[in-house]
Image (tube, rainbow, N blue to C red):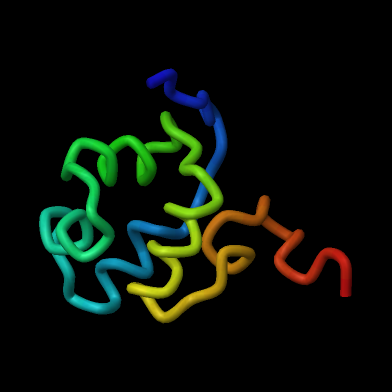
Length: 78
């Protein structure tokens, strides 16, 4: 399976995960992916599929927009 590049993109997954006192391994298990996938998402090296982004957001109690929207664009489309 090809990986989607997200190089240079910032997201708030790490901050949200730490606020919920979860390890990368715990988030990976809860979302059904490897810890390495979580590492890559947090580093901005991998853009998750819509399904995975929704799953990560649900586990973290956030919205996809809140986690992955470019800085300053959280309310875009409102």
